[in-house]
Image 1 (cartoon, rainbow, N blue to C red):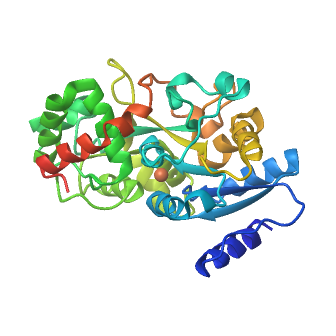
Image 2 (tube, helix red, strand yellow):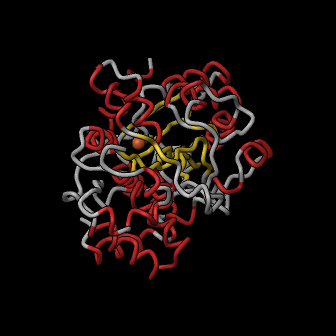
Length: 341
Ligand SMILES: [Fe+2]
């Protein structure tokens, strides 16, 4: 059902015509940069709960933002859904969102996980962990993000490219913690410790550390969980050769990011869009986020599945995730000056 909607919409778009929702039916049109099959469960749950039909167009965040800008006031899109507060900020700075405040959203979503002007909300969280191969690097040396600049880690660090939004947001957080000069010093130190030029993605970097190609990397927690239950026995075994570390437990806490969404400024179905956001904040949808994509729920009363409980309890950086966007251009300049490609 959903695929049919998706293809119809994509086909229409490729022909240069706008998406026409089925006559008479209540609909909500979502532009999503989340790439998780599990999101279909969320859409199904919303349709079952409300009778509102969900249409989805999926692409990466910059492509969807460009499309929203091109469509302008004629856009059929009601909601923009994406991973990373830094990507929500890209849409925010193009004035693509309208503020939405409801009692459900205000009560269910902690203030640190939403835009201060209620332009977007985080519905799940992910944490960026340090992964270490204990045969190569003493885990005691890498208990903080700042430690990755320690000269004792020369030739040990593998990283993704700096333009990747997860790293831009982490640097945004480091700017908040250390100031721009401190963050620059940190970036310079990390680059000096690189085992190789930045490459790969979170999954391949965890595997590189497991294989001993480098001793340390940074990756989001759910990639580790997915490897732990991989159908490929070698990937599963690799997770036993790396140790996840929750950084900064003695400091401000581990860097937190979100998956989030906001209602678009030209939403043709604004009421349905608000109901969709409220659904994402509901206990039912929060359980789907948790069980199907290995993210942490934004709603703190939702029980965690075994895979997340196994990671243990930890302290989170309480900073409002909106600062990552605010600091994003400075973050990129710091990376560039450090030579972090
Ligand atoms: Fe991801």
